[in-house]
Length: 468
View 1: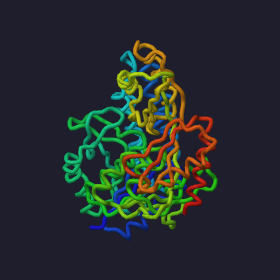
View 2 (view 1 turned 30 degrees about the vertical axis):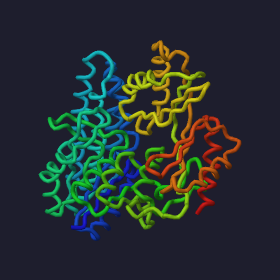
View 3 (view 1 turned 120 degrees about the vertical axis):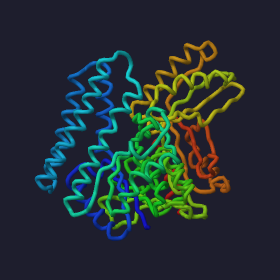
View 4 (view 1 turned 90 degrees about the vertical axis):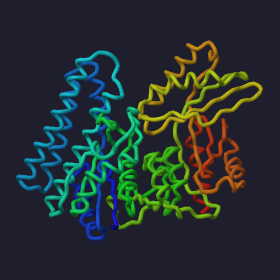
């Protein structure tokens, strides 16, 4: 069977206009494919609100978390009331929304009665409700338009380990759950609307796949049902040569290899989840990124044959980081000890030491902070680093500073030695703290001071535009 998995991001389902677009897309694609599976993210901003509510509950601030839940209820019910739904469908949806939110309030109440710091496990138990709300709204809209559809929670599909905030699916166990709970729906021509981002351990404890994890959900589902293709619907035209919010002349990239796309996601492109590419690459399932408001455009195709073998730079990305340095030649062995202590401060993303360097007079280690860590991660991690460096007698004298990783993306960049020389020549007036060529052979990363990041990004993007 030709099967298409489509994931809709929070920005593409948060308004009646957006949901009208989603409906139009689904109705069209239902005629083109034997089976459809939809993956829904939470409405934009909902997950952040739920995380805040969990922290307020842990601090015993009942008024605070109740206010957030009330606002979420108002927002979702207002959206439902604007949709062209029948009276029975609307009433059932209202009841479903209230039941989910009341169950979540009970969890918050239990958290409020405990003391101490909020735990990642308690956050995982509550923040998946945003996806559950969105999935039920989409399924109801499809049913109203004569498509057989049902909302399906991935706690009954995606089986994961028990790493809080950043769980990893167990593909073998997930295949079994999908065979029992999802494939029978497809055989009956039902369009399931599956919750992204969330899963459960083998004993049923709720888990999450990290921020942006709905992409990862689509990837895992696609592998487990042998999907023909996977489409990610978002509010941009595809993968871009740079973030269009920073570079006005950024362009859509027609095609990418799996390795190029994975490197773009890892080094800061926010369109895709960093871990979703691996399963697709292994099974050679094509992935397409498309704009929900411009469905006629082809977007970006990511596939095994998606990389041009010519010497062409595809994109420039950037991502914030932190560096620890000592103005002396120092032993690196205490740094991993400090690193291990700091990692616990970031439950939603793995901090990576990707570059270290040493000379006769200086030592340097650079930490990459993933986009999944959240907007306040840099500040939190910097404080934790400074505290732990000072507390360890072996690392006193090390200091912390903010840095930026700027990365050029291109397949086989390691075989194109002149590009490194060209980049360095173009950046001749920029102080480069470190440089690394990635082991995937698809990335060249420079570490620069924050004050030089915008100029570095602009100068390197000029190379992308002119290399094509």
